[in-house]
Image 1: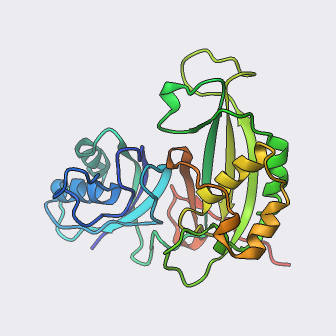
Image 2: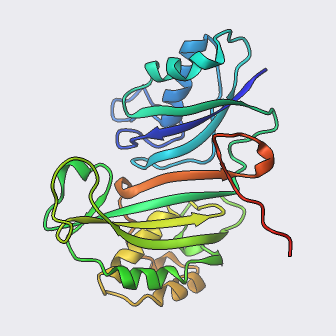
Length: 281
């Protein structure tokens, strides 16, 4: 039975998140899931029931440009070259499969080496309407220097219990952050914006893994630091406290993006980001 890996991009605004939620379709106030929408599209195209396993679950309203998932087909006779365009034709505009490849049976999308998330704050006198779904507008000017000072305390192996959403079921809250930085970037796309007046602040985190709402908790705390309402060193106190009482308000889901997912080189999937082997000392 052939197994396939897919690289997915989606606008998560109108979805309940990646995971299928019970009751969706029975109650009008429930939004569909990314997982369920893709599963239905593949099942309709191939005429069989499939299970789509992702590299991780994103919350409601969170976006992705590099989510990865895998699935197995048992009786589908559609040529591999026709699978990607066929699935995309059945998906809504908010979801697109960018790449698809057959992978070894031992490949598991959830066995990642590292992931990259970005959080986008929008700066300016007013919210840019075209960016409302994809950023979080902040009225106050954020100090990027202070944010980067705080991010230095995030890098490394720490217990991120304080930044984990209450009720999350995990065996360990220890994670390692390899890279963390805040940068100023112009507003993309058509339109003329004064770069000194309206711009984006991107907070980029690369880590071994992330807890539920961990990035949004960090972003909300960095927002307070960037507004000079608390010092960068508060990050140390938060990590040591193992208490959510010291964490800033959870930043809105609209600004969060799953950018990339890396896998060990031995997986052998060409289109996926391969995590480089560490040199032997």
